[in-house]
Amino acid sequence: MGREGSEGANMTSQDGRRAFLRGRFTARSVMRPFGALPPMEFEEACTGCGDCSRACPENIIMKDSEGFAVINFKKGECTFCGDCIEACETGALGGAQTWLWRARVSEDCLSQKGVHCRACQDYCDEQAIRFQLQTGGRAEPQFDLQSCTGCGACAAPCPVNAIKFSQISQPTEVSQC
Ligand code: SF4
Ligand code: SF4
Ligand code: SF4
Image (cartoon, rainbow, N blue to C red; front, side):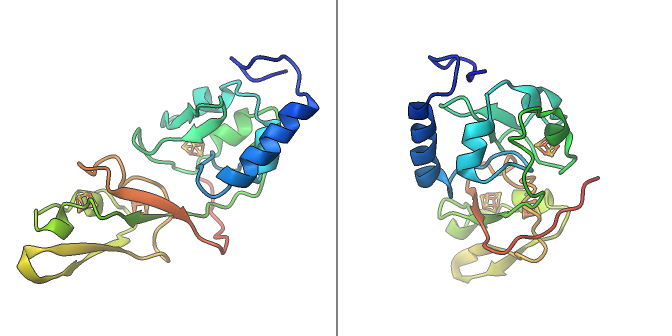
């Protein structure tokens, strides 16, 4: 079955090549749901059916511009419940259940500019965020990569969308609830 909204019903070799190239260039920048296969395999397997999205109790799985499932932490956090994995019948979420994404802060952070804000810290259950006081009333949020689970709970409360996510190189096993 082709992706919903895509032009063709069946995967052609051209589709496969596009997925291959897309995988090469987006591998490090697109946050797929928990359990996703590596980028190229994921994009070959995901049909854009939306089953994972409907199964997610946090409503954080959207579709990207290509119709593939993508996480949006502006909607909420991932609890690593695994419901998306169970709902996916294509195997696209049948990869290693590791989560390599971790939070970091961008230069848009209000606190770094001297405006009092601790919203991200307030929402972090893991207490992974500490503030390093600086001159001029500024404070820089610092993220402890050992404590951060990459759940995304800190992202939505940030008033200026300053929380970004990057992948670490070493897998960290995440236990399911
Ligand atoms: S693991 Fe659970 S909360 Fe996280 S994206 Fe999947 S269904 Fe949603
Ligand atoms: S919530 Fe956003 S603006 Fe506020 S301290 Fe955290 S990163 Fe900075
Ligand atoms: S991603 Fe989750 S664990 Fe990491 S800093 Fe944000 S709220 Fe805390």
